[in-house]
Image (tube, rainbow, N blue to C red; front, top):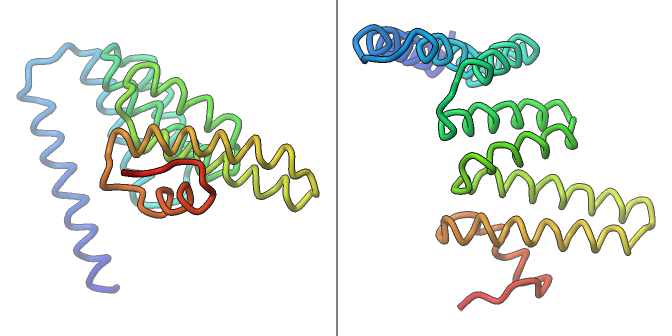
Length: 172
């Protein structure tokens, strides 16, 4: 087994142990503890890239049912969006990114992922010979990237370059 994988497994196991200890000692309701457990289980499966997205989704859906804090729910919804993006289910992914942003409008990664999906759809429209639809998708991608960049100005350099090259946004 490669050393990086051994170290990764050690870190994963250590993180799980620490999370379990914190879950026991931090004063939370049983519902919050259950929500965290489902979230953690879903996140671990996603982070380890086991490819068992169906089980991860079940855990995330259960976590959304139990989690009442809007900020925490936003990250759960964002992670559900990630899985749908990975599965090529872009419409569902966009829905979950929107839902995450309704609860936490300060998720630049959600805006970025929405922009990437719109940009991809624009490229697909070009391949199909529909430049008008492509431009609409590219304009939407630009709007989402502008929001992501506004939240984290030093990030998304490739998006900033694309916005400059396509003259969709001027930077100071």
